[in-house]
Image 1 (cartoon, rainbow, N blue to C red):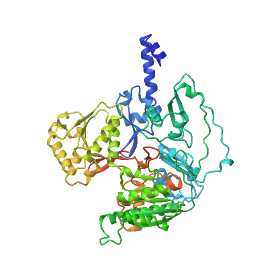
Image 2: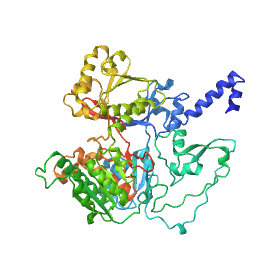
Image 3: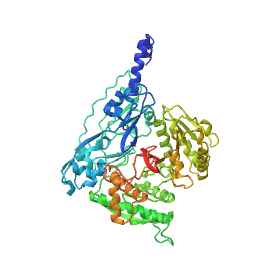
Image 4: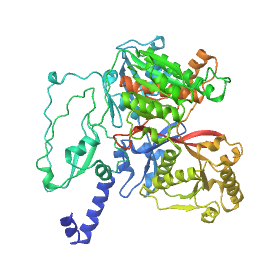
Length: 610
């Protein structure tokens, strides 16, 4: 770089040219559709691109592979140019897929897989309303490109290897001595360079790449601006190495995966029939079995049973063991010692943190995976790679909100109103760290309940963030905002809080509506979606009652867990969840990092980002 900057000093014109070239080059890596945040507006999904120096409409068109006409149509005025910091909505492209029906698939499962309605498939393929046949080719139109990308090779889906973060799940691996290793193409690295590019290969992790090039995982994350240790085959990593380390690097082929621990990657063989345990607090022998917890357990089980029935229709076979688990650790240990848990493959539950900690320790010793369907403390996943936590904590939700606001509300004034409670302070700190980790936003303003109003300026769009679950403080804050409403126009104010506000009658709905209340949520149950409508009809026909949130949680957790962890299949869209499991370190458990940003609009909740 020293040579380049010496030449930059020669002429001013050359200086401007190279700086422009450098900006164009560096910003080319700043927008990747799979990493961009997304918003639903009037039923259409958009990438949200924040314009960086050097970006143009044509540049956005090339990087997102979306026609210029669609970009300008979604962003009136952009045909005249875009400015740094501007939020540009880029329609997610849709395409037609020719899909070959796999064994035991149904019209419902295919519609679910491609996130389209069954009516749409029937319209493009007359006659399939009477059923589909194995090997039949279907024309599926108007498929979200991101969804279509998952199924580029649909014939191999049921036999493919599925990867979530650092965990790879595979069928019985081929014998090593019958599969010759393909000699890898040599990686040519100029010795004068200290920064090289490397394409991640099938079966590799960030850890294995770090060992190959003798750099730390942390350094790879820093150089590539990675927020987790998750990489995929085909990802291009920038690796900073010393010249003397390059000369003797041997790049070898990746061996076939085996059912054993390789680089802390947990592998499990595929079976013809599985053993699954559900640990739920029914409290059937209790004096009051109809309490709130029992009702939740029953609803969860109803959704879980519907998911298992759906999986059976797709060829999944399992033996299910259901145990009534109270908040009693001694009883939990006795149940785990029973014959039902010999050779168990997967455990769902329990609900209570004390029981979850006991089961987690047992799973670590016996190498059995468990999925926690409710919120559990981070201590349960720490140091235990066999645990999956499906519900983001309040701290993780505020991290998601901070990243979202820093990327999307670039030109707005963001004010963090600091709560005073100890738990709320953790959420506040998490928001601050996450917001400040995103470059491109000018500044986060911080204030107290007594001083925030002095920062508000009439006519300037302002987001007030108050990450508190304390009812008294929340009521005080909302009353204060309403009392200061003369200083500001309501359309210039957005209030961001927590999901708990929606259950507080004291936080008036018309106040939430007036100030465009937004909050991060671990899930989003939308009864207007075709998939949810279909499952709702099945649920009513089976149980003669409506689908609740807890029943939806049961359906999603069981359907996703069995599909991915046991069968190695990507299940596609779910009722109200999206699962993106990540580890802090390779020895820790997996935490779902996916969340939604919801806003109250016309007294209904609408998803604005996910």
